Length: 279
Image 1 (tube, one colour):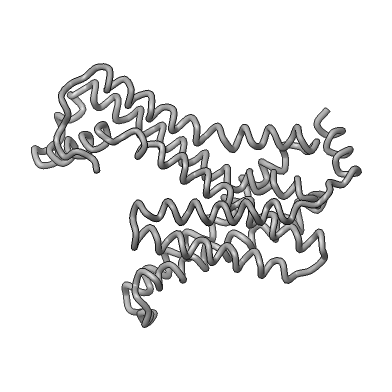
Image 2: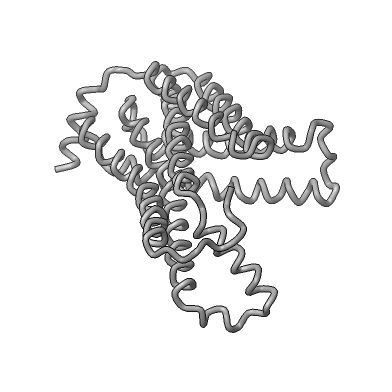
């Protein structure tokens, strides 16, 4: 638990938490980039797959965010009937479905149109890394911006002069919670991002089977796995709090198993094309 009162001033402890927050942001940003670099080198692919994956994530959010906002407003305004299920469970099922639909249909559309040359297990890994990496990089940048902003606020008390006493008290409480957080709580963001990336890659590997096996049913498998995993994650966050991390880790391990089980030999022709384009 985070302490509710400010700890005694300790320059060593203060420097340590600064390092932890900076490392957390750096790790979150660096992991997808390093994994992308490894996959490009390992399979002779091109960075275009990674970049298109990032763009696909943005494309999916263009639909996902308004749909979720619209559904939330419709339920609040009584335009849609309240589900008979437990509210937390209903939210998990509904918003897990919207996440799965927008993501997998966006991926399918891009693979069908813009990435017709990407037809291998390695390609799906790199494309999925770009998709999941886009979210990781955004999370890392936000974490870094928050750290820099609060560090400046801590060093320069004049920034609070324009606030009311109540606002100052509320902000001080938030600052105390932020700077007194245990190091393992800080790194929880990095761990969560890694597990999410693993799941995103597993969804992409499943979806790639549509083209490798010429069977559209694999789109349904990808949708179903994404829906199940995301619904469980949303429900666990609400119902179990910190214990949800264990469930997300289990889901990520299942995703890793899917990635390994669906591994297929790489196409020599595709590797040759990738190596030529990377020169």
